[in-house]
Length: 387
Image (cartoon, rainbow, N blue to C red):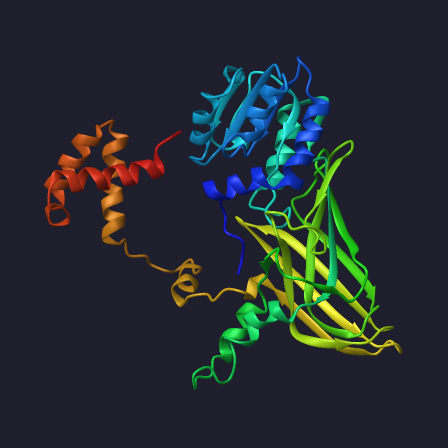
């Protein structure tokens, strides 16, 4: 299981009402904003920090968001003073050019972990192209931490459904996909640490050189128990006297914290070690996580070793494998033919109505009436039209 790519309006509301996370940003912005401050918020969502920046006296605010959630921010702006200072921009921050450099970049682009979509690349671009020399970026730094935990409650999501006897069926073949996945632990779950947390690495948002991270922890086991997996979280520095953490032993944040299971739970004793190597690499449009865990006894003997990766966490269809071959001969579906006609007509500067009429003439079997043809045209053009 992976975090969903995208937030609902409900999610944005929960972020606003998360007291620890929101208070940290409010504290930092209150200290940083002056009457001369020009602000850029990337991933503004429903615009809370953009609206707050106006309330705190910023001179100008650029609020950028690719999702339609930005419309909620525009509506809220009508009910708040001084929000005419906001320029709302729907799109990706990496694809826009501002008329001026800004004093502060706000980018709360976290998911459960800092590696969320292209967010590190977006922050790097914002610093390089939009931020004044010596300007401020919020958050300034994230430190990634990890600890081995005993959490049978988390592991039941693997052991109970993907077992030998589930209503008389053997479902063990599905288990390998889940042990190569990670998921967000609900904030209500308790956790037992079997060693002291260690830092896997850090992200300095003013000096990002790569969207990837590699780290290693070597834990001396401090408590007897069973390691079911590794808990990962980040400690975020927002500004002077402003920070927060989604660590599992602290009051829960909207982000939750991440659980990376071991392939098989291991029983450990105080004095033994667990060595953990972790890698997060952006490949194409998705992060691939790889983690290796080695259980070592007091004499240095390896008792268990697991190599896991989200690369193996999803089944791959035969059809997708066929597409990977340069010799594969594709056959365009009816939907593809429909899209081809719509885009060709649009390239000839035809109106939506004209395109619908052409479709009804060329592909009469596809539509019951003109209204259905119009809906099909609008759906395709919304996907491909320029912003």
